[in-house]
Image 1 (cartoon, rainbow, N blue to C red):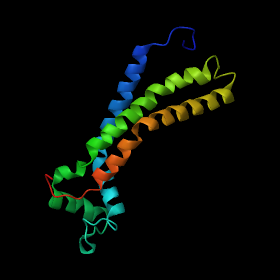
Image 2: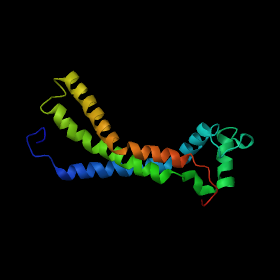
Image 3: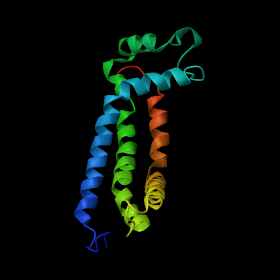
Image 4: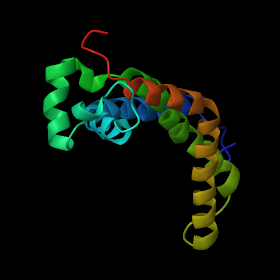
Length: 155
């Protein structure tokens, strides 16, 4: 049952799931080159694939050398795993937040019980995040391993 006494709409859950997932996929793909550069700079000192004389000198050097040495598409290496991991994370967060709001905030008026509403809203966001994390943590590990790989273009 919803706050207004009506049955919860299962289609709303599906819409929220799709909206959260699609927005996550688009945003992660847009920033994938920046994420890849950041990750390479973080792991280059311990990577056996990058010899000390070939290490990147900074962000600009990394941005310039990646397409030359690995191909332009390598900016998105590991992005599919990232999207596969992030899509359900955000989709579940977005969809479950409303479900948990019904649990924590059923019958709470945000105008007369502000602090209770505030705490319930925080609890619903935290519960939604914890729920989604249970499903997607293994995918996060796979994404990090794939993105840190420094192969040649097409490999």
